[in-house]
Image (cartoon, rainbow, N blue to C red):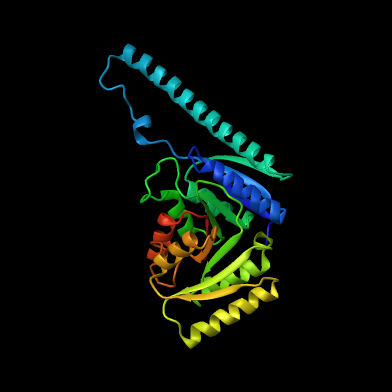
Length: 285
């Protein structure tokens, strides 16, 4: 069931502006409403601990009163900060076109919030790294990894810099997630008019050649003239080379294989691509 709604997740990180521009680009091509979420995490234990200690009753009472006032002020500042982030996000998205934007401020666990709300959206847009991750290339945002594991919707992972996508590289291995990705591209207005290349990383076989031909036929039925390629080598190296040297500015790939442990970790190829890839990535389940 489609909802014609896009869920965009923003925080105070450098990636939030890119999330907004990518969300606006998708909404502009689909007519989707954008729901922007900022989820304030549960407060950490040090802020909640009893700091009064063994103090005489009068002093203890005064200190507890001051701590209560400080706690209330922290909560108000966090709420105001969240609202400011959402207002900025709404202004960026609305500034990119006539787009319907709604904002949602929540407190709690981000992944629990989004998994509870994902049925109200057709796609989730999130930055590759969050506030806590910094710019370390090897460090993915922890919330990104958790959302990819938990979500059953396509997840659009925004890189730091926004550019309008023109050439799309689709990692194809003949598995269920790559077939789903091809079908999604063929039907979605997000990809209309873009150049599509299907690539299989590894040794060519008659079965793979046939699967690539069938996938290209599906895309042709959707109005695309898709190129197919087979490239020897490890998938993460092949995909990184093609997104860099060949000028593809959007990568679509499956998030998992079919392992029984898929709920526990992201597949190694996916993780490596998210770490190293300098273009946005759409992950399909």
